[in-house]
Length: 102
Image 1 (cartoon, rainbow, N blue to C red):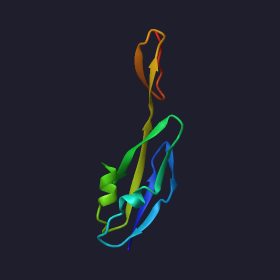
Image 2 (image 1 turned 30 degrees about the vertical axis):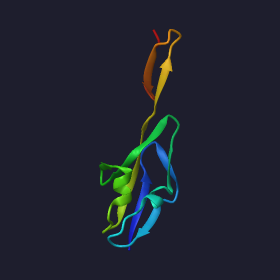
Image 3 (image 1 turned 45 degrees about the horizontal axis):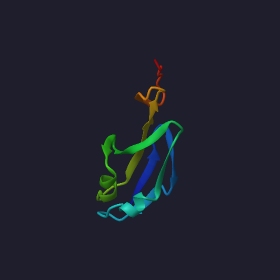
């Protein structure tokens, strides 16, 4: 039996279930992955996962055959917002950056 643990990366935290026990050679499954709840801090968004500092998809996490203990980092990044000025001009602004209307 091996442990798959989820940890929050910078700018977020996790809710739900974050530790799972998996038999050798089995997968985590999408059902278990859905039990992990990414909770970004204000101004941030959930962007994905990494295993051993390599970005991986949700499908990769759910279908990876487990042969050792695994730690999955849940990643967060700045959220972006679309602003529209009074003339109808639209601009995408990223949280944490300055923007000046002209």
